[in-house]
Length: 111
Image (cartoon, rainbow, N blue to C red):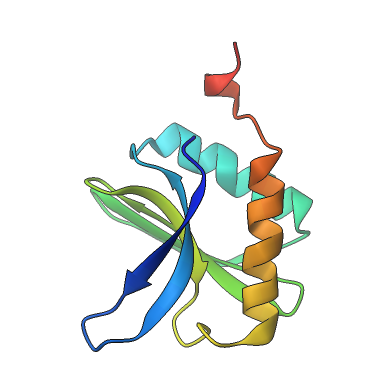
């Protein structure tokens, strides 16, 4: 995992912080991260959209909502779900997500 904070700017100009989980798009890693977040944050996946080269899963927890996203060319990231970029519970959830992932070592990366 290449965990770090990054900024994302939408075409209409809105910017928000996101977590870059990995620069590689591994479906196995995505599944492991999803399970870890669900358990550690006591969350519920409210929507799971899977395509050929993208995945968008929305996690509701702690009064907020975040999206775990896999993009074939960009890797895996986590960001506030649509419309929640300034929502305090969602931003707090994003902070807690980073803390959870900072201490997490996925199975495929263990030595």
